Image 1 (cartoon, rainbow, N blue to C red):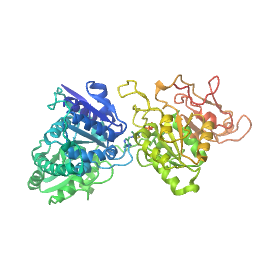
Image 2: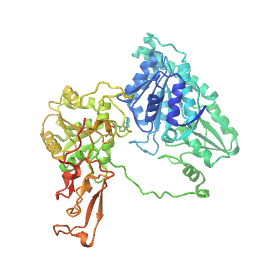
Image 3: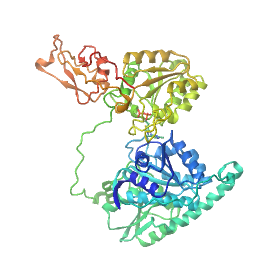
Image 4: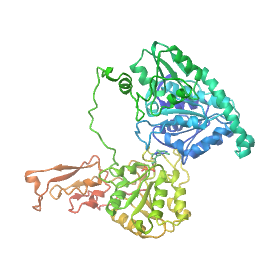
Length: 608
Ligand SMILES: Cc1ncc(C[n+]2csc(CCOP(=O)(O)OP(=O)(O)O)c2C)c(N)n1
């Protein structure tokens, strides 16, 4: 049977057909749907959202020790978090096959950088497969588990956004029963990495990479297509599709395995074609390694961009220069740009509106709230990676001493806090900082599409489970008196933040407001607010909250005078189809022009 699948669905299918027993992940675009598909479609596989990528890989390692085929999936930067276990997992190898899927994000559609994770394969001395479509995504996964067991190595499969999210036809197969039995095996010399054992293992992995090089020469996924011999392209992954689309008649060496590389095969390709070009997205990974083998491609990164995604047009223009003609039906993009924004009713908005008013320096983190860096909020001044806000705030406080007192806060989401904010908060308490940290507890991993985490009380399959209490956790880490606030009540929020900023000891504020998209967290919904156009002065205080439900319209003539006879340039309007009734705008309007339709105006929502 054949089915149309995204790359991520095909990766999940490959794991299923390979007989995977345990799958762990931490959400991150573009990888998230891999585990979501497993949880939804393949009920016999144990699936979990782990607290972070390091934990996910360690869970997979444990399952492999027990003999299960197992996988961990994550976005490219997730591999940085998992890099510590990864580098030594390479030494210990596997019992049951282990595949680590990395989904890279060229062009940074939803990421903080566009690092090229092919380097991890070389760095960790691990084999890496890179599919060019959904069929290969499934096949390379299945194959990955075999290679993992046959060569006693973790295997990496690399996808990119365009492979993960694009759809293609996939031939389905039946799941197999994996060859390794489930049992407890005690093999400390192989799995307990003390220096004396690890020294031996290092030699083993050097032998392994040599064997993998030999394997790469035979691997059917490393394919030569000889057409016009004047130009030969060495490429892999999505770049193969772009190149093939614009240059169908050139010759190709299409690499399905991007590490280690098949030197003999590459040499033969150089013999068969006149000129060789290496086409790859991001870093000159293939090119540099091919040059290091002593070959001299005629072009690579001297022609093709190193930053951002490629596409057929870029490939054609880079290759042909002035000789390239735009395609016949080429349409220039005419869509207006729509900067990302916090949703109407988002609990984060009020917190940032208050922080803006207080003019503090905000060390931010990764999540929806990072959008507060954009106008009109303009109230997030740094962020680098998940969990960084807490340590950075502490470091800043220590550097500034009294000069920074009351002027800096760290802001971190609930999922991010549990991912990697707990240990820096412990550090901050241990080292007696005066820093103030705000956890934005919207009861979900919002940015990546609302995944559960240990603070939501639900597993990936919706089963009820233990729910971490941020208040109690904060106390356990050393915060004397954590404070809980309603993020839609701006006066209360301002008062609490001011008090906490005054403290000489570490302080923690927990902003408790569920993501507006999480229906299960609300007891009832509110009615949309309305602008009384006779009273609105057009001061834009509501507009400056950056709520997509509020717009501003210039007025002239009679409309330029309010009921009270005052002049105005414009008025605000609230789109009732977008307004969930959070009442933030109601609180900032000094003229009583924004009117609640509730019997008694409420700040925010009645939540569970
Ligand atoms: C190491 C790493 N893993 C995953 C991601 C993807 N990611 C971006 S923000 C985020 C978490 C957002 O959840 P939360 O902190 O609760 O904030 P929210 O978006 O709900 O406001 C994740 C998982 C990432 N950027 N880096």
